[in-house]
Structure formats: structure tokens, C-alpha cells
Image (cartoon, rainbow, N blue to C red; front, side, top):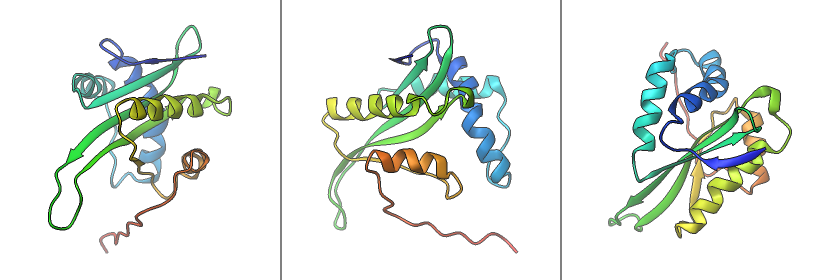
Length: 156
């Protein structure tokens, strides 16, 4: 298994891999998520990969992509209430279920964290739906801890 930076031409591979995580979200929260067409997802990834604030990596088994991680780098100016801030947001991570529990998620997270360090960005955050306990276990293994608890009240 190898991990390499994603780039031009990887949009369809990322869209195909995305279904492994998106389908979980769609099954649990169809009120929030919608079915994504492959061509629309590929176009979205192509657009994201063209931005200097986006970075992604693909894990491959030598023949085919088996996982990916997508990150966004942000900057925010200070204001009277908050300090100026630079951070990396790990937005998406997915591994083909047939390849899970083999260190692929760890390798992808490692690539994202190393890229953040290389950019001099030491603040890294990510978000996870409360039901995604498998991903949360991976994140905790890297030292991530819950920081904000979001509440919602669905319409009656």
C-alpha cells in the first residue's frame, strides 16, 4: 500500500471512494445529506483540487485507489474576541471497507498531519457526526479530543 498526493485527474477516484463515507452519512441522516451523482461529485473534487488551500492524498494497493483524505487550510484574521488563526481542517477520510483495519486510515491521517506540519500549521481540527464512532476511534488514536458539542432540534 502506498499513499500519494492527489492531483489533477484523481477527481473520479476520489468521487468513487467518497461513496464509502457518504453512503453512511446518507443512511443515517437522509434529512441532511442527499444522493450524490458520480459526475457531480467528481466535478466538486476537481474544483477543490484546483485550490491552493486544498490538499488530498490517495492510498493505493498497487492496482487501485483504496482510500483518501481531504484537507482544507484556513486563515482567519483576529478580531476583538478571537486571536488570528491558521488551521488545517481534515474534511473527509474514507477507506474501502474491504481494506479497513490494515493501517490505511492511519497512513492517510499521517500524511495529512505531516503536510500540516510542513506548512507550519500546527492547529488541526476535524468534525464527525455523533454516530460515526469508528472514525472517532481513529481520531482519538491521533490525540484528537472533542472540543465543541453541537446540539440540534429537528423540526416537530
